[in-house]
Image (cartoon, rainbow over all chains, first blue to last red; front, side, top):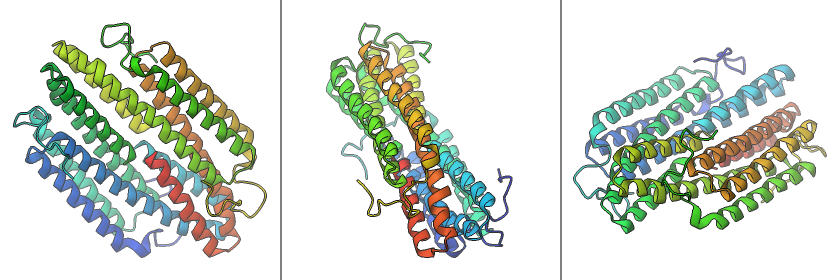
Length: 107
Length: 107
Length: 107
Length: 107
């Protein structure tokens, strides 16, 4: 599943989201709790539509994490390559990012 | 967050997914594990795009659960109301289900 | 592209949306106009993000048509089969409808 | 509907998609034809699910245009601002682009 690439796009040891690691992990812990909440709803025979509403809410929260990761990737990795004047690398990174957006849209 | 309704649409003690409870809980446990895996990817400074790819995969898995819940709701609750000849109730349940689909589409 | 099926699910000469044909065609004409509007925006070198915002609006309008078609299909075709007591046919129609929802979600 | 901004992000007279205008207009003309095709399907009482399948196809084609616009915006406008060393402007443009992605995801 790792991309061809898989090293950090900014050529450094830090991913684009480095400054927000703890916040992202907190968001994902909350989503993990929501997924456990879904199991509980099923366990307790909750009405189908109420479970579905909660599935949509968790899905939205997850997409929100995706959008934050995209923003920080563009902000630090893509803009970093562009600021460094490496046109070919910037083009590669932008295509890679828009392919990731396509996967989010299809998800 | 519970719907106005919130009782089982088939008027019985069982939701539409009753026969597949354990399978649904297993799917959701796997998704819970995937969300924990996302936290680990962040913790380990995984490349942004590889995390995003995995976010899309988890999102797709969650939508899959949504589609299964919808299928079983239509199969048992909505079709049940229709088979019982209650037109008004069937109409209400169909609108409720398509509004749930809208929420999934917006998620 | 037609489904295996491709005859009307209610066994009749009318699709589920028969009563709303003119309204659906009107909605689609408006969407056609919006797509022409997008061509004009591009022609006039409109700022990328403003074009993208409009693409999202047209996409939302199109999904709205999809949701209406789904609602009327469930209301008339699926509920009709269920009311007629044909369990096997109802099950088939529900699976077909949820697969259509999956295609909308992936679109 | 125009953004606060609404001038070209690269400060020039050309949008990010300038080099591909004709190709984009051609894609949108094809989509316009598909939307007219949908009206014809409705006019001819085509089976609901076959119409829905085609709605999903048009929706996918439209999202494809959105992804192309995003790619070219990032490639030319955002990367241009970053290459010019304007950090504040780059940050603004990235946020603007990710908000556009959010609107596509909700569409």
